[in-house]
Image 1 (cartoon, rainbow, N blue to C red):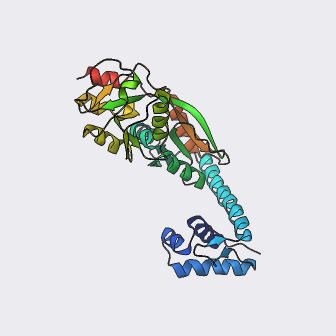
Image 2: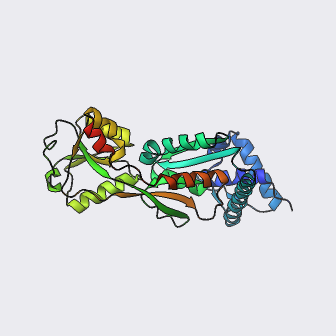
Image 3: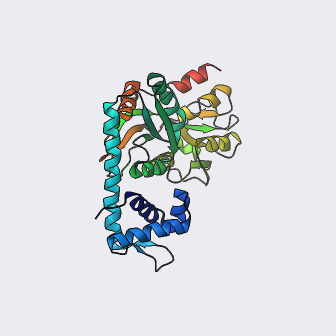
Amino acid sequence: MALDLHRLWIFMQVVEHHGFSAAAQKLYMSQPSVSNQVRRLEESLRTTLIDRSGARVRPTPEGELLDAYGKRVFLLAEEAVAAVQQLSGLTTGRLVVGGSTSVGTYLLPELMARFRSLHPGIDGHLFVGNNEAVQEQLLKGAIGVAVVAGVPREPRLMAEHVLEERMVVIAPPGHRLARKGPISPDQLAGELIVLREPGSQTRELQERALHAWGIAPASQCDAWGPEALKRCVVAGLGISLISEHAVVDEIRFGTLALLELTEPPAPRAISLVRRRDRLSSAAEKAFVDLLRERGVWPGDALSRASGSR
């Protein structure tokens, strides 16, 4: 019995997106076409793969088993493509790199440009999102390699510590604690704290730092992404903790102020992350080598910015 891989892929999209309509949108197909393809797959296997009795479709035990094998089939296909690309070298191909928000915004564009100059035949693409989104794309196989803040705890991923970065406390230029020299963390008590969105590694670090300092913010505000967070602080909404690399320009031009602490937070790790069971392509290996050559992510960026004012 031959298994139709096209129908298998459609079935897997129905399972992943929990419905025929959602899968149809993802696949740019009509909902009846998706339903028909899954039904024909069921007929060929002489079993029911999708439980359609509830408000939300779900796989039957047979469907769950087929979905698990399907993931292995398509992963093997990806590895076959990667193996062929390795034989053909780096003259052609495609590279998709993931990055958590701060890393993807302030580090990876430079590295991708450098990679492009070395390998102009490789099409480079950059996916940027918070840690949860990047991990999801890695596990789905949409990206093969990622660089993120922190160390993912997902057991299906392997992480390598490659760089570090400092986290700094920022405030509006006219803030009462600006330009006062080192201050103790307890002087931040009562301030409104602008936090990154849930799911962000920066958010996790912000909450950990506040706990270590024994500070329970009087109030807080969530901001999605570093740019929104910075704009909230510039506008005078509150203070925040953020990557030093995210505020170099604002410090240089005086639109944000640094609050120097007697107990600064520990540097956070920057990790190279890949899926354990995935074979890296030649392009991905070349990018990883370039990242390792980087060695450091300059930690004196803010000192240079402050000195230029």
